[in-house]
Image (cartoon, rainbow, N blue to C red; front, side, top):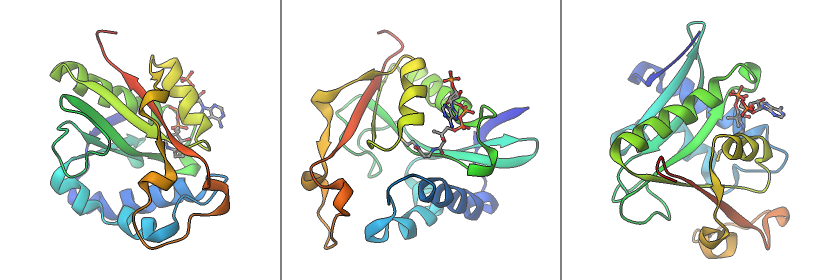
Length: 176
Ligand SMILES: CC(C)(COP(=O)(O)OP(=O)(O)OC[C@H]1O[C@@H](n2cnc3c(N)ncnc32)[C@H](O)[C@@H]1OP(=O)(O)O)[C@@H](O)C(=O)NCCC(=O)NCCS
């Protein structure tokens, strides 16, 4: 049985650790430039957005950060009236049981209730997530893609694989 609900503060370390583990398991480095340290600060995300967890058989298996308000500091590359979710992640040891799908559906329900369109960004190495989004009704929005060179502001080098690539946008609305 899978339950999706808001993370409680005592679960924040587990949320950070499973999210780093999920991103570390991707085929290309997604944690460069200190992103792992930012991911581990779940409390900061929970202060400005909604951190949801998927609990499978009593254990936190996955998490996502839902940003319902485009004026939130956690909202990235959205326009007024658009919602977003970020850092969707399921513990590599708990995959394929429906936790990821349940988290995405929870975000879709929140956006539908608010009448918002969801706009999200993925990377070229997140094919499993992209397949799930497409089967859930998300549409590819190349007009909202963001090239990595445009996004990169901090003083760190992009890994070679990222050069010339872009964050790939998808959107979903209950009224589409
Ligand atoms: C994407 C992710 C969250 C899916 O989590 P999960 O709990 O395994 O997902 P589910 O069990 O709910 O399965 C979701 C769908 O993906 C499919 N799927 C799961 N694992 C798969 C795999 N290894 N290969 C192909 N398809 C897979 C399932 O069949 C299911 O298909 P459906 O949409 O037809 O129902 C997880 O793989 C992950 O953490 N990936 C790394 C982080 C990431 O890419 N995040 C996206 C940020 S935008």
